[in-house]
Amino acid sequence: MKRVRYVIRCFILYSMFVFKFFEAMNDVKLVSAKDWICEAGFLSIVELWDVKTGKEQVLDKQKSAFMYSVSFSPCGEKVAFAGLKCLFKVCDIKTGKCDILSKDEVDIYSVSFGPEGRRIAYGTDYSVKIWDLKTGTDEFVGHHKCLVFSVAFSPKGKKVAVGLQDGTVIVWDLKTGEGKVLGKHAKPVHSVSFGLSGKVASGSEDGVVSLWDLQEGTGKELGKHEKMVNSVTFDLGGRKVGSGSNDKTVKVWGVKTGDCKVLEGYDGSVYSVSFGPKARKIASGGEKGIAIWDIGTGNIEKRFGEECSLINSVAFGPLKIKEGKKERLEFMQKKYKKKLAPIIAWQEKI
Image (tube, rainbow, N blue to C red; front, side):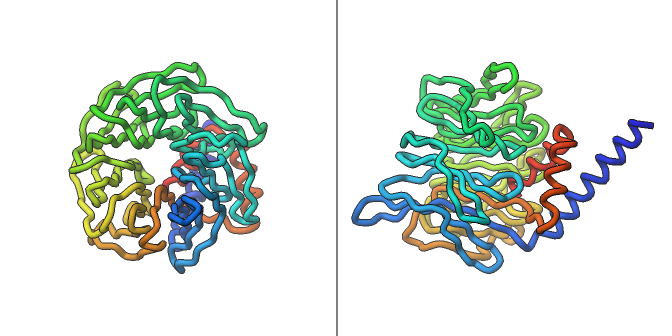
């Protein structure tokens, strides 16, 4: 009887999240990190964009820095960002307040929020670390002999995938502290992304987009770009992988079928990609601002940002939680923490 009640509760919770997802599909936020070249050097800006209205909100500015990575918290309340010679920060979207997580201007190539919204994985120099927002401390995960270019939490938050300068793709188990090498590219891995069922996608300077199966210990090549791949990302359901490259194209790959949809028309290198609701749209950022693509037609629907700016990282925000629902969401996260983790994690890539 207890098992029946448990199954019913899980079904109700899942239904509620699915309903909230479709209810909020037309209220999508996009965050970006861009660089302007000015007299004093680089001016890095982190902005929040409303995809429907095109309105922008500046969250942070840093001079003589190079912003490299942004990541939404699962509930969309915070944005973490960092880069080269940048302060590692997290901003509250509602208040606009930014907290400095690290006072040292260390080089961080990638940041990734955990599914519970408390931890942030990041790669600095030759190490992978996790910052705990509640305690204000960081935890050492693993050391590498080369630069860490990309990190990504698993949907349940138990593992972290890492892409390295020497082309290696490795997954760290946060409970045991052990690292498992999935495979190796011929050149540096610039991006990794965790999907469902232990799938990990990687994109490399060799132009190859690879798909690794953590459970089976196998890997395969999804396909290639003509030039280096800067970004890879899974869609909400783990059925598609998006990739952006210096060949000025965005490609969408079928995880099971291996088919490829090529999106052309962006006049510049693509540095970052992120799927939108239902994987019908994908955002890309690069040398010519931000583009929102309709995957079905292959056309650019909207453009954001100045064309003279470099968009280094873009991320779609999660579904919008209406006022009055936040307390209930936090209660359910606490009570059903383990079972809700995969559902909450999916929201990060909406």
